[in-house]
Image (spheres, rainbow, N blue to C red):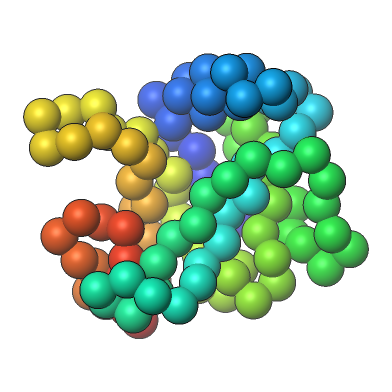
Length: 109
């Protein structure tokens, strides 16, 4: 399961609304792809539909879909949002990552 912090929820709802998505019926698609300075990087986008093999979760009022392959890398992850002095954006707090890069957008196992 993937958890969503309160600050991430507020930002997701705000961005989904701005992009023409409905936060109560549409999804946040979270995935992992090859690349980044640590080997794997996170992918986050909005989606109106889920595929048959997607894992579907809901936490803190946010509907999340994850493809089957990415799910193994993301079990137990919390999606957070940082608006501090070091930059703003979504942050993945992933307990499975052995190493992360300085920007926090890539990781390795």
